[in-house]
Length: 193
Image (cartoon, rainbow, N blue to C red; front, side):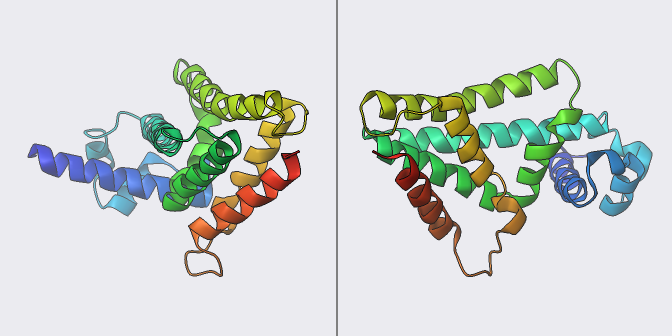
């Protein structure tokens, strides 16, 4: 099989798997089922992925990198702490709304990763949350945000952001940009002095 065709087939498998994992849950989807949905024999499936977990790993780490890349671009030139938090929130929302199925898998099915991938994923997530924690702490230190527990504040923010994939509708009342603006406004109004 030519290399480009292999990449296309791998991308197709990943897309189908992402959709099925979101729809049924990672554990409920078999390799045979994925092969049927892609239209290939189960045996040839292993030419592209050696296991179902390797697909999950690809989805989770690709999404993790997407969150990091997007937030780094969003924060690159911003110096004001409250604007940094606003941009971080909006970048997070944008990644979720641009990748609805993959976001659902990333946010819920990472638990099925085995070691060493599970530890790597948790560390990646901890570093990403650390960006928000640093912004919150800086805002409190500068007197921009009310003094409160940083961990609680970050968990509350992610609780608000991470369910967007479940209710966002591209044909709905609000665009992703409007959702990002509205959520960041509500959060900032709640923590700003």
